[in-house]
Image (cartoon, rainbow, N blue to C red; front, side, top):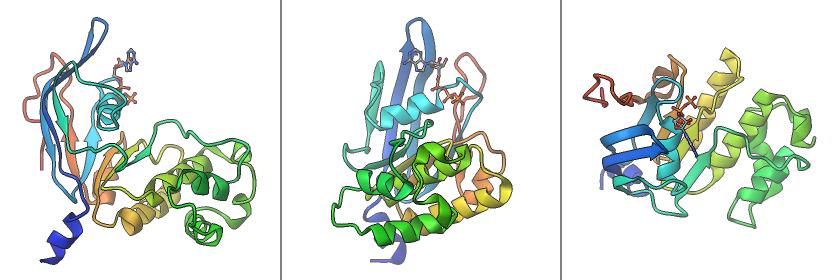
Length: 215
Ligand SMILES: Nc1ncnc2c1ncn2[C@@H]1O[C@H](COP(=O)(O)OP(=O)(O)OP(=O)(O)O)[C@@H](O)[C@H]1O
């Protein structure tokens, strides 16, 4: 087995085949066909409202396509960072990460160590309600990246981070991806380069774009 094959052994290949999604009369995705290859990194780009979150929510199993099929995102094997932080406000950063980690034996000490690579030490024992927006975002990122899975979905993970902090957060993602397939919805122009990602542009319904995958 080559190194690449080993990395891909625990990585999901995700396929959308002719996927359409509408909310009421509003058509968001129309006949979208896409493949996210195992172990690769993707940035999902599109104007606001074009359906990035909707697509990620379908991969999470939280929305269902009106037509077409989504395969490869098995329930329980997906790590998720939502567009909202979804943290338990009264708990500390360490407690939040421990709360969502499926291994109850994971040590507080190792969680603290991971958090401290992208957050100030002094922030780790405060209720997350007291943290800044960018700090909360990083706590949510650690929750997602430490969750074992074959597919990682991050929805606007770098919102509220300055350039230097964002580079640290990207470093954290690289350090903890472990060969898993990673899909990041983002508006950041430079994020694909920072992440070493392929860019996937969602076609805007009624628009002229025909080939969403530009390598
Ligand atoms: N549950 C819902 N009910 C009704 N409309 C919805 C629902 N979820 C999403 N939409 C609509 O679907 C469209 C796509 O929304 P979505 O959040 O997927 O876009 P997005 O590309 O992620 O946008 P942004 O970059 O602003 O986060 C929007 O017009 C939104 O109002």
